[in-house]
Image (cartoon, rainbow, N blue to C red; front, side, top):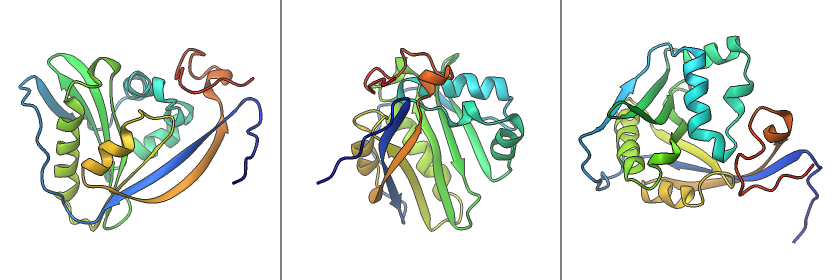
Amino acid sequence: MSYEDVPAGKIAAVVTSLEMTARPAPRAEQPNGRLALHQVERPEFAWFRRLFRRVGENWIWSSRLMMPDAELAATIHDPLVEVFVLMHGEDEAGLLELDFRAQGECELSFFGLAPDFVGSGAGRWLMNRAIERAWAQPIRRFWVHTCTFDHQAAVAFYVRSGFRPFRLQIEYADDPRLTGLLPRTAAPHVPLIE
């Protein structure tokens, strides 16, 4: 076993990549007539970043907050990238992004719930829709990556959904709480080392 110090001002996470190579049997979900999934064609940057922050702030999601507008547009306005908002009545409850840009594949780029909806059954409902949408296309592989900054049950949730882990990596980045991109109070489960 070996250890490597992470420099002050940086964060490090273990990233787990998971995949499925065939559509799994549907998982049971709690019926909820108030949930609806809406595709957002050419999302406005301010709206997208606001929802991205709302869903991801506690998990240190920062990649899309740092992207210049042109780079963000090249991704979320690409016709092979599908952006969805999960609605619960009039409330924006979650974000789903599916990326079909690699031929024969779909990456579950972003999948998450607003804090008030975590643990409500909305995640299973949203995952079932994500699997349906992904496998409605002619793909051979549906994959996702998650990390140790995400919810502690994320890997188990993905495995129950039909994904299997295939790779572990270490990711280093500047801590977005120290750069001012995210509030210092974000992700209290991740130590802040100055």
